[in-house]
Image 1 (tube, rainbow, N blue to C red):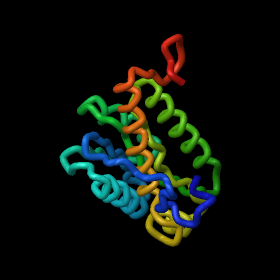
Image 2: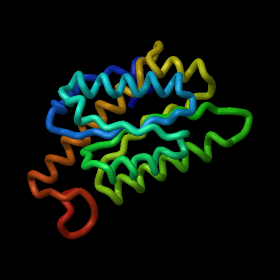
Image 3: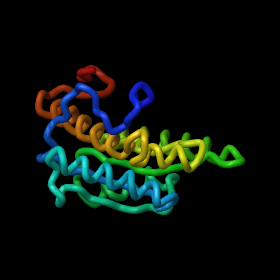
Image 4: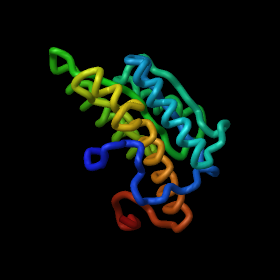
Length: 177
């Protein structure tokens, strides 16, 4: 999605729905905090821009990106949420650690989403170097946190719509999709 556009913060021609009636979680990795702080601010400000109330945005900080799935689970256990945005940054190093971390986090967030029914948004940067991270955390390519927040708003609306219409997302004889 973002590779086709220069700025990650451009939501394109699709209108962003109002977020006033939804509750959002924000799980933020403290590792690479100079980057994740900017991503989290972009996500938070975007939620407010589209109508989310401050008291409806709940945040938890976790030590690193690897802990994002558990952070999402813990935050969800504390309060009823409509979508959770997970923010992290894993910069490629001299070893393949980034591949293992990124794959584990992506799988963990998918599993959490499917098991809980709460959309869990992968707002994790996976850059090759710190310059690429800065470019995507408010630099020349926008802010990935903005994109994650817009995705969370859309998913909360989709989830609400399936609840309201009786349509079920998933598998089985009553599945709408």
